Length: 222
Image (cartoon, rainbow, N blue to C red; front, side, top):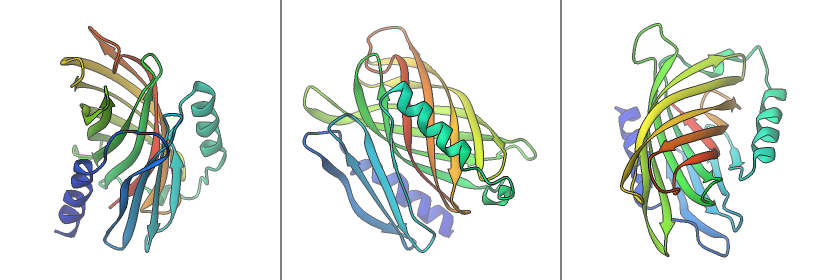
């Protein structure tokens, strides 16, 4: 029951996370769930900085907006891997992500919140992920897109490599899209970590969500 309440609380953050504005803006005022405080800030360059502090640990991460930035962050996370800490991940955990995405073709950024249930099929290292993107179009804040992904995870220590295939709906272009993504997650303990993703969205029209992009932020697992 505690997990269900916590998940519902995290999902509800999507209703208060708004789009990027200038100058630097705190989109999500500090909110505390089960002794853990979360904030999300939009930066002028299109990145988002997510932070969590509390009884389960501390983490902060800024989403990348360039290929070099994404590659550097992934490299740093892999270099920080501790092979003895595979127990930081649980096969059947529920994982929430808070951060941002940046689409290179359109130059658009959006706040990201997602929830993944790992191992819904017993014995298989896969997860079902549902995500919501909150963005800004022509000065109006709102839902930019939503998507679902089937993820595969390979745990190598305190780091896991994660890749997935999915589909979603682009609310700006009123169009469906396919999605391929992959990246890494670094855990600081059993509850708190950071992630960096590369993604490519296949869309029939428009460029608001189509093309190569990046994602990053914090993770919180139950």
